[in-house]
Image (cartoon, rainbow, N blue to C red; front, side, top):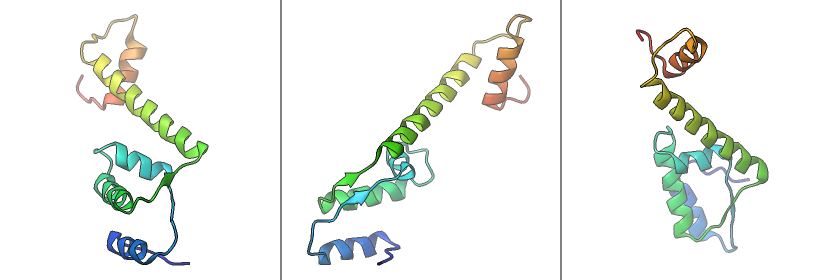
Length: 110
């Protein structure tokens, strides 16, 4: 087994490799490529660009894709809740919803 710790190591390995390699993408890698607010976005994109340069196919399994879809849904739901909170006014009938949205937003003095 070879441990490749940097993009430069990976690039050198791919240049020397005599066979057609492939890459298995886990959920973190897929999310890192997709969203620039992810802490690994730049590194994931650098690896993705390197793999593309060398025409290395990227594969994922059903679990990784489902986890990725779940993360996207959670991100969109949270964003929608925060958007809903903006124009919402606390009333007796919506107090539970208001407090839930306030907690999601992290609003301390609402």
